[in-house]
Amino acid sequence: MKTILLLVSLVFAGFALGSCTNDEGETEFEILTPEEEDASVLLQSEEQTSN
Image 1 (cartoon, helix red, strand yellow):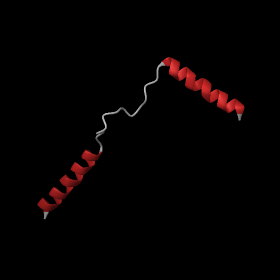
Image 2 (tube, rainbow, N blue to C red):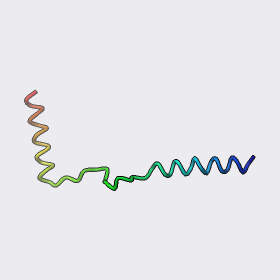
Image 3 (cartoon, helix red, strand yellow):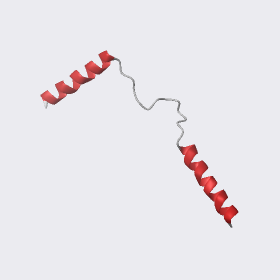
Image 4 (tube, rainbow, N blue to C red):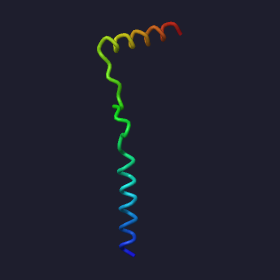
């Protein structure tokens, strides 16, 4: 019985670790250059003032 529970817990642990990987190879965050960041801030401030 203990062997079965150990195997089941190892299978669940394997599923948990396997689902945490990022297979796409892309980073989660978009890297902005200072110019792009300034442009996006200006665009947001213009949208807020026009509303």
